[in-house]
Structures are given as structure tokens and as C-alpha cells.
Amino acid sequence: MLTEVGHREVSLRRFAAARYEPDGPGDGHLAVHEDTLDPGALDLADLILQHTPPGRPDDPRLGPPRQWAAEVLDRHRSCALAALVTGPDSCTAVDRTGRAWELTGHGLDPAAAASALLAWRAAHSGGVEPAELAVRSGGTVHRVAVTPSR
Image (cartoon, rainbow, N blue to C red; front, side):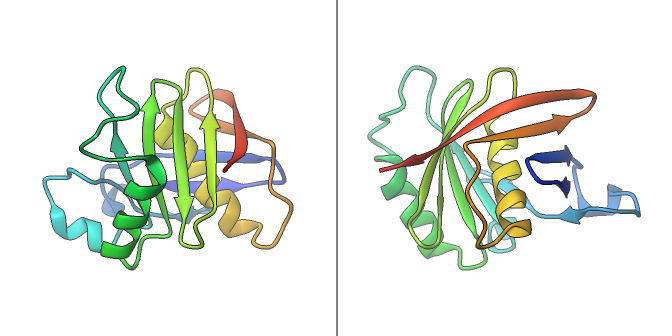
């Protein structure tokens, strides 16, 4: 993932592999699905994702989002953020400190919303958390609500 971060906007460009990323501005991070066919990529991932089955945000195999995220972050020490996609427009993202956010953005892949949050937090460490991010993907800007989770 190649990102460019502004005050309240994050531009995302996805690439299948780092070798396909163009030279130029932006910061990169590696987002990997937990069920990847290349398990070695999990050890390099900045963001690890998992999807609950449709209509089952409380899938007993994964447990609650915070529990799943804590286990993933414990197993993969290079991972900064774990995101459990709980619906077509939503996910729960958890960082290493245990802080969690509910991300909701209509028309945007929740995995992309998690990547945008990771990029924004890296660029604005210590800053005020946004209540909403504008995420540019392709030629479209999506609004993503960022709600602290308890």
C-alpha cells in the first residue's frame, strides 16, 4: 500500500507487491490477510486483516475483535495494527497499546479504511485523533467515521 497523508485526508494506492510500486512521493506499508497463502508475509506485515463470515460479526472461531487483535499482535511483533472486518462497510482496528477504533465508510473496503487509519496515525503521532477521515482511492473520496471503541 502506498499512502500520502494530509491533515484529514489519506490517499491510498494498492499494489500486489512492492516491486510494482512506482517511484515518487508517499509512504508504504504492508497489509496482509491473516489467511494469506504466503504465511511468511505475516512476519513482515504492518497491518494484519481478517474477515468475519457475512452476517457473523461474532464468529466464535475468532472471538471478539479485541481478543482476536491481541492474539494477532502477540504472534506478529512487526504488526502495528490488526483489523477485523465485521461487515461490508465496517471494521474494528486495534493497535499495540490496546486502543481500538470502529471504522465505518460506505463504499470503501474496510481493509482500505484500516490502511488509511494506520497511515494517518503514523504521520500524526501524538496528534488529535480524527472523528472522520477522507480516504481517496482512485478518483473517489470516501468518508470514514473513526469512532474510539470501548
